Image (cartoon, rainbow, N blue to C red; front, side, top):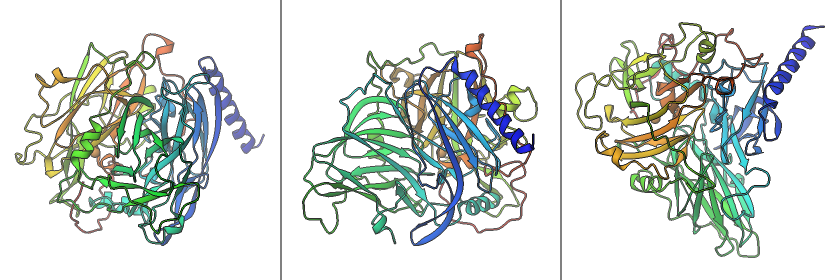
Length: 600
Ligand SMILES: [Cu+2]
């Protein structure tokens, strides 16, 4: 047997093993997808560039399945760098092996090789998405996941006549890898996008874009289910459709109490299911996407493009010279509109869709999420003797450089991480104040994880800080779980009075939710999914700067409550690759670049 045949045989046996392992627990159908990752030329904003995409499309292919199904995705890396894929919002019971964040649950899939992910769906229903979880490649490597109700079941609302997927993304004219690599080495600010896109197109308000503007054809009188994915790298987004009302019915793969609204605010990582009635005069209307900035108003260096697509009714009418623009789209800094929308989100919490909020908390954590500075006297970017960093409880995450956390945990290998992520910040101060004692913004790097026993009922209060005038929303994303948002508030969390206002009746169940600017967020979850689960801000700039940690949830007492066996063909870290998250040696390279006016 030659080596190629041998490899194919090993791969075949591996998949058979995977299948054998899972068939005993699979209840739904099994689906197979092939993702071919390869660079391809795309032209937007009058410039052509080569970028990595899946199956030649941007956004990538849609995974469409029913609740409880299992999907095998064979990812063939024909690009130039190692890559991983994450199945965002899929809880993957007992199966951290296929979760995806590089150096956390796996090493990258090397160029010229492939790896089959086993994506196990359980309670999720609605819209989710998949994206690369290596460096900033998710900018172009992402797509929607549609989880339909189980066969024989239906939605908790009248069945829509049709559906429409809207993937919102960020477009960078330059070579993103080059830009990010350089900024991380020098400590300069990370790049801003040049436009946003709706299903890959920036729309009429951008140069060289008119003819390619995305058009959505609708029939008068029909009701559509809009499936919105915020795949933008670093921005929360306002979205509205001219003259049309939106009814939000789902978020992050869970149904919510219907919210009737003229706009939405969606954070990166979040997904929303929205009912849209085509009930206005037949004609053409803009839908529009705009950056929502919760940063200090003096920070203006963000992407101000108004990205549009056109809702086009079928029928006979005079085509307007320009469709109507949504007057209800909030402006860039409209904190009140963002908060008003977010505060309305509630779980359905009925008999068919009950909530199960942990009530007997056994583990409490209080975690600051913060902008920081990291001491670096030789760096040229941004701050004096320092570079920008981010942290949780003043630990700025660095990836292990020779293996991944899951492998090290499972094989009992020391040195890759430590288990001392703290339950509290190192000091308590007026987190949301305007003045701070000297050097309190300095952070330290580490690969510290939090270990939880199986079955613990966990409550975490995230406290935003205003260090470095950098208070803003941080959309925090937990892998392997959904969590309940039981409280949200302004200023410093008060552990006497604020818990009295917790919503334990119908809190939203989500996988990504913003810690508000100058405020706090309280969440709860039951630690019933053993594994290693990454936990990070879904602004990639903050992720790259270290606003991350991981939970290790230990095995329970039985096989059914323990991590499954690893696949036989997990990618290994034999070929060391430089990560765009800072690694131990990331700051030693030659310094280039200039100081810039900072936004975070
Ligand atoms: Cu953040």
